[in-house]
Length: 153
Image (cartoon, rainbow, N blue to C red):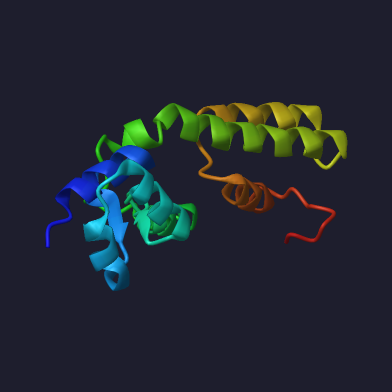
């Protein structure tokens, strides 16, 4: 038995492609005997003929990947395109370190831990790139005899 015409009519009624038309295997004989559009419409109402859902691209893997990226994974050599300077510019690194160092120096001056003259000296040293980090700067200050109220010694 051929149900090509019935599928074509159903596709037109369901507003979908012929390949998306599903006919219940239990009622194939009744559908095959149907000739008129009204009969097909009736079968659609009864649920013997349906349109299959549209197949989409699953986002499951994409979401899992994004979740990993949020955790800082997938940053290996194979993923990188662009120099380390393009990804984390030297200027940004410098701005981050110098601003944090200057902020600490300013706090120390305001707390009277260091004199304004000492502040100026350490400020210029920081500007010259003498210190890698705040911790490095503090350790150098301790070596030079600056005592911190927090007990960093």
